Image (cartoon, rainbow, N blue to C red):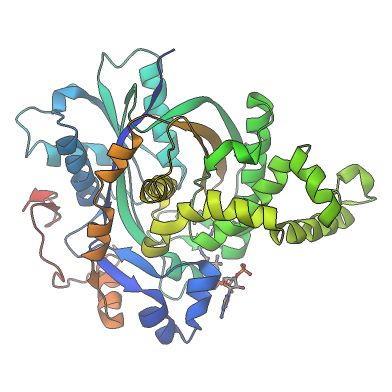
Length: 440
Ligand code: HMG
């Protein structure tokens, strides 16, 4: 069977940066280490006043097409995943195609375009849609562009404010991919939840503490479900585990639960039993409370073991590099985590071809999905072609008052206009309705 997966990938960050320990923390009267150590964040990406989900998506897609030498006729499908859409009728992909048509001779009249919504997991769902379309043989030899693009903004003084971010990830999905192929098997954990909502509002209503618990519960279910279709998996089978990263501290919590789940009934659990005891099982306890207390105690002990720390350091920590600097990109977040991991391997001369990734996607509302990916022969060339460092380094450093102004300007409910803080160079910019995505 032909492999299908991600052939190439590009990112586009918002052009502004907010420094959390030095600019944000003093204004909020918080210890900077709450952000750097607690949440695991040093900066967030923000869109300048001429940027939005369309321009970031179009800029990422344009670089992707240029780098891969593609013309519109090579693309049969453009899907956008976002939870920051501004149009309840036209999908964002039509706006993106409109931008790209300014710079190519051909057009996308033949391409199927759509928009996916399920909070942050929609990026992975769009990836799945493109995968299924190709595997079903409906693609007529063409590739798909899947874009995850969001401006992840919270109301000011909401606890989520520190986790904001803005950026787009564009992925080329094709047969015989150069970067990673996707597993057929998937595991799901899905339930109707109300901890993170945007009912006709731009900024979310969030029960932050509960959202952490819901993330962990759905991830646990998805892992169980994955194992029920793919069979037992061993944590050492994976080179990296890119997970949805609203902030790195969340992944720190998810990783130890995933490890606990994966080692159950393996040689690792046997080895660790001598050090921290057996993993508690529900049948051994009179009630749920006693069982959960024992499980929490076991998990705390597990997180302190050298075995776990080594696994975390090698498999999870490298996925968090970019997130620490850009914050939450919602739909793009898990795909940024994959890029971080592959960049880590390239920088450390690790030969990844043929190795596997354990990918954990999550979206509030809520659903988690687990699948695995196999790294392809040409992965290094693809990853080394990215200009992530250049994009991150050239961001403009916001003062706190500039941050407040730009935050107001991106609040659709306010009528605030601000000067551009950076100068667009050869990129698509938002210049008002009717001039969306004009090429500058
Ligand atoms: P908070 O309540 O202000 O923070 O916001 P906190 O008091 O819980 O502190 C955060 C961590 O920093 C804690 O670590 C503290 O101990 C630590 P933990 O105990 O959890 O390991 N800390 C410090 N560490 C070192 N030095 C210090 C210090 N002070 C504190 N001085 C909260 C946290 C998550 C509630 C907030 O960020 C929030 O509401 N975020 C938005 C919601 C969110 O991201 N939820 C994550 C799961 S849901 C999800 O991922 C989906 C999402 O992406 C949306 C979608 O799918 O569309 C959000």
